[in-house]
Image: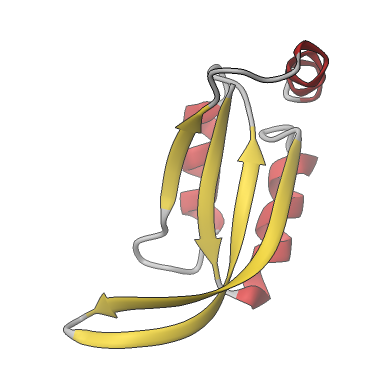
Length: 100
């Protein structure tokens, strides 16, 4: 069961999270604020962002990534995949049922 790690600006994060769940691309999306420091176009930026952790399935991974790229306001959104090696069976079953 993969989890997508995504960063987004605060004004877009809620919409992206809700879109992924409403379209059944993710069973749930956890959101929490973070402060990011990064280089973009040669300058160092310091921004408030929101980290999204979207739980999905192998079968829906590519669709989830494509939808994030489509909905995300950044030219180059951060989307990373974490594969869980161990989860509760009941949680994995729930994710499978919700991401149909």
